[in-house]
Image 1: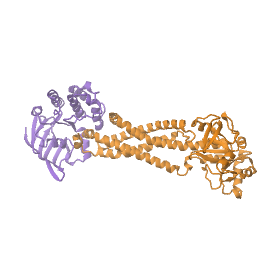
Image 2: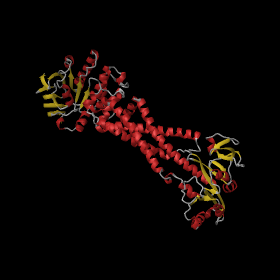
Image 3: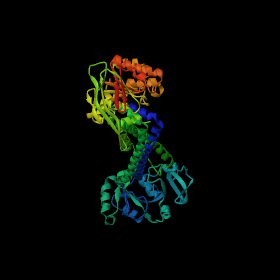
Image 4: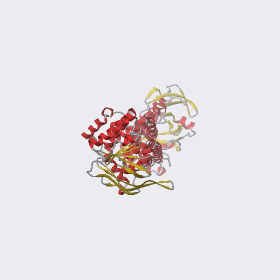
Length: 367
Length: 233
């Protein structure tokens, strides 16, 4: 009967109910989009790192596993690495940001890279052959809608797209190594070095050996598996705190929306509260129906927020899939729902307690 | 002391020197100035008096909606003066049933659910008893139960309110100007129903009214003025 009364109350003012659900749903969508983008970008990095086919990644001294740009390693280090025990192949790449902080281009020695990775699989065109040519992957192309042979403006310069390759390998935009080194003012330098070993079983011992070389003592040297495992939400500095801030904002919005909505509802229903009290409804019963209504609004907002996150996902996938590779993180649905419900219940407490404290005679006389 | 009731199998309301003073700002306003009244089980008592005479305050105290300031009030054997707010709330579930001038049905629920929620709050079986079904027939609203209040006439709404008031078999039915918002025909119908409930089911009724014709439906009439009973029959 309580649920029936609560649903009847929600249906009695459908616009208020729908607006409340919408406003509660917005922070749910916000949380799910930010989490989806965080996970998506990291998964994209993992996928592209694995696509290189290397066993070991050598990063420059004092760099973190997240660093995407800068080229402090002398290119001579590539041939030095190639001479180390078990190293079959070494290739250096240079990373340069091209669109804000989320999207970078990579310069690559195509011959060595093809040997290491098995080569790019082109869906259109072919690899670059001239200095003014660039190749892009299918993700990046889906936000620019280009074809092989078209020109594209990158790094304030016009380039010809020689080919479009299947995504999931190294980078979304790939230049010849020397061209990107020159263009970024890093001639003779690389950002990181990929190593392929004679046998993957030797990876750990090879890493151990490299770290034992005095000149490489402070260099971050990772196995590919180690590097990709580091690319998760828990290892990104400040990301947890950022998500905490976003969740707090969601709680505050949910609290404010529900508090305002339920306060208005309690005001409008003062007489009904008086009627319930005349029937013997306790303070607990009055509080229960107000909280139940808030919980239903919270559940509705969560469901709508999830639906809207799919809408945001669809838009991002169609507009900027390479810059913002979002994924749907279902494991966060219940967390977003719980966060919302906490906000909704907190928001309903004041109006609920206020309703429960109404004097029945005054409430019955309310016009 | 005024005493009313045709059935003498015990007093259901016993009031002695009842006083109630409201605080308005910094001023004490006495609403009841020493009321004595005994109502026997099965009585149909009408309370009449001008506005401000204290009859509504008496109604609210007997109904457990507000505590007395002083004096003794026993309703169905329970001392209201000694009750906490929570205890008076519990008393309202089954001991008293209210019928108001403005019907006071929950607008979002159907007539059936308005009655059902009274049972839900009282914690009784959701399915009404057989004698309640008989009461519904007596009220003539059996075919209107699935309508919401805004689809019912004033007379129908008041009948639903009566059904809700008696669904938990209260010891006392308290009616505050039950015909105040009704036309003559519906007024007579509602008053006839109250009389039938009293006669057929033995329901104790305490009715407040301005209308002498309505008061005539009761067995006894008590007149109030300035917070006191000035005439009891």
